Image (cartoon, rainbow, N blue to C red; front, side):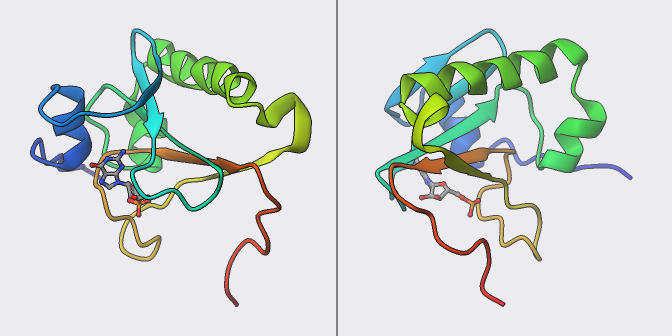
Length: 122
Ligand code: 5GP
């Protein structure tokens, strides 16, 4: 399986500084910023800086250093935005067409600040 990364996607442009963002945290391999159209009081997007299209791509091909950096960044963000330890949160990643992914650069949505409701529409 090969993955094709589009370097013109909006998050690649954010990473290159071509589009502004409201940064929550930046580490060596990871950037986190507020979603432009928040679906909850807390809505942060966490992205690897590397060119990974989806969660499956990142999980398969990112280095151990990138994977650890990403998840340790998440741990910091949960505390920074006050969701954990605390009221809790939902972490979602949409992948591919069935997952209705809009931006083809892997990102984790961290949603919280209210009860998030059912996971999916059945
Ligand atoms: P997806 O549907 O791919 O999982 O989610 C893409 C998310 O990116 C959406 O929640 C959307 O609001 C957010 N988004 C799209 N364009 C921008 C942008 O230019 N800046 C920021 N901060 N978020 C964006």
